[in-house]
Image (cartoon, rainbow, N blue to C red; front, side, top):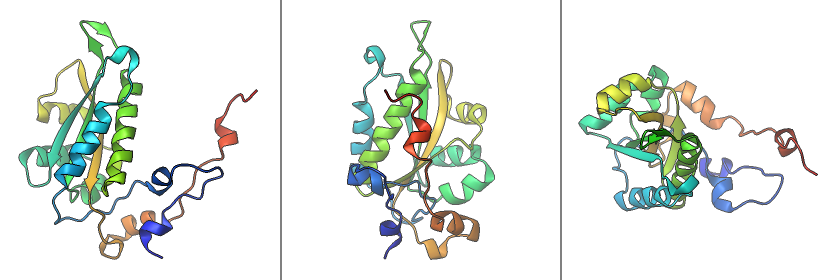
Amino acid sequence: MSLVEERVADTDAPILDILAARWSTRLYDDVTPVDDDALASALEAARWTPSAFNAQPWRFVVARRGTATHEKVVSALVDFNKAWAGPAGALIVFVAQTEIDGKPVPTALYDLGQAAAHFTVQAHAAGLYTHQMTGFDPVVLAEQLGIEAPLVPITVMAVGDLGDVDAAPAAVRERELSPRTRRPVAESVLIDD
């Protein structure tokens, strides 16, 4: 059985195959460029995410491996994330617009999270692998990329082709091969009348 087959979630209720098969890998091919068509489709899926009042309080920074922008994003990551995310074909910075016309957007983070989720599902459907991370310095990243309030970097997502688990450092390999787990739905549902 391949790593991809092993990573399919063992769900308690049926879900879409693409959702069961999607996982946040730390294994990236450091040679193959990110598929531009697949990346464009993932960004398009994010674009069509629902948002409160159709405010669309999201922005994206696309940093392809080998570019100065990619180097800037990598430099803002914590050391552990630099090691595994740096080789990804692209790093996408998900940015929330926290104000529109001087008024706070209370749903900005929620809407941005939905955009990231739509991005991951479409990317996976197109054969790309993703991993979101918060292990970065948002102040340094905003400075490096010239992002100013009311725009705020919230998460960075590695995107690319799957790498070789056998070539990964031991700490990454151990995480990739450990069982996938989630608490039962019953522990997440507060009320179910």
